[in-house]
Length: 289
Image 1: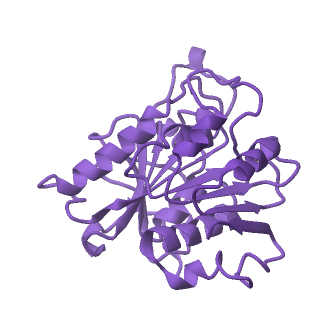
Image 2: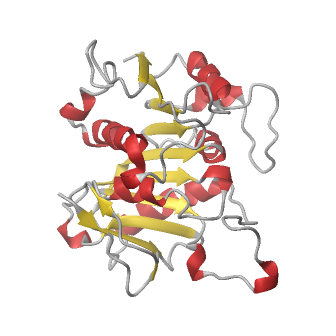
């Protein structure tokens, strides 16, 4: 069933044309005053969400950008399937800069740290128990996924010790094989051992500038179930394709399996003839299942 974006009224919301999502929930995209410097994507009618079913998906932006809408099609699509999705940053259209401070289109000077993902998790868990919160009792506080694109994927790895996280989704990213040229993020190959639960790498094929890093990460992970998928689109992924493209499809299926226990979704990743094993749109492999 197709649903369209419902713009928030009381809270600042994403402006622009409505987009159709494939999930059963209309989606609100907003800045919540109780969670500064973050953008929240969530089902519009929280009262219609069954108690303790709203899984949490925190997502580090590409470039560790302060634009919380830079991957909005991807994030909105996932939220439409019954997830509380949070990205660091702001809705830029709601925070216009003075003309003399404007950069090139799409540029933002601000950036975020890995702590911004932890802040998002803290807020979601807290809202689930706060009397009067619209999220009260609705969040599956023990079903949490940490994800991110490129620099944002490194942010997700950097918080790998957080025991609340159930699964990791690293997209067009991987720890640098030689040094780390990105200031503000302390991440190295040894931290891969901190990852727990399960992990999937969603990469862009050999033309992805993070390809070698992601392949090396995957080869080093032996202690948890791990999957690796290449979508032959390069580093830019499918984030802003309609409905987030096949990348959002894969991530939603992984979340449905790992956070909701959906057996149909599991069949896309597990078994000799799994859905993505034979899907000609991608190259897929797995281990430790």
